[in-house]
Length: 257
Image 1: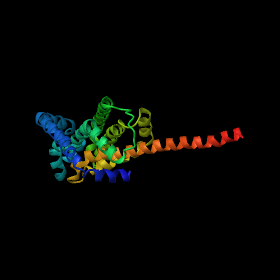
Image 2: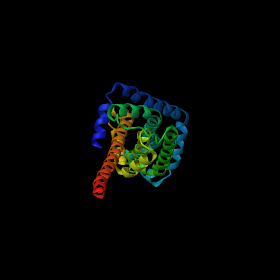
Image 3: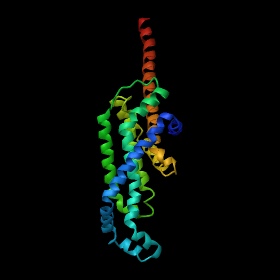
Image 4: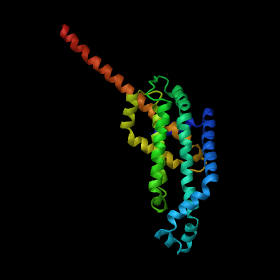
């Protein structure tokens, strides 16, 4: 994982990655600004309706420092939720539209001997992104009350973004080069590592300035990690085949003798 993180960071310096750092995030921000302009007041009213009558918020209104927070609770919640949602949209755009280019770039430079098996494709990428986004939105709605609890609100965005990162990027990183069987096996065998990488990327979002580069950085991390795992899987398969042949040759020689 450390190797994938390091190589992905160095790959960010390549001129071909510069445009990919700008346009997905720009589209995501424009989309959310448009949604905010159209629905912000309705969203504020809905959040106020959900939380203002709760015992916790009523208690907060009686304590001066917390009263200021409770008064502007809807705005605070919307800002907290909007940031990860905008980043998720950027991840979706990169996953579906930019990852094929990124995979081609990385594989040509660092994995030239990796033969494409095309176990996935554009339709599979869209379907995978749709499923990941649907689960993410459900989890956001279900956990929304916990975002106001001090022990949870710093952790929940990281865990939710980690899920989206690993769910989207792992498929698109493997779709071109892995067969369907290889893709399924690598995802099954490395779930823990995928989620750990997703957590690292989700934390990196909060680094000033660098956070804007994270969607592309995350894609590169998963490309390097997944293609290296695919290369190792194929190398092990070739080594196993060669060992089996070498073991059969002496046996046949003994039979002939």
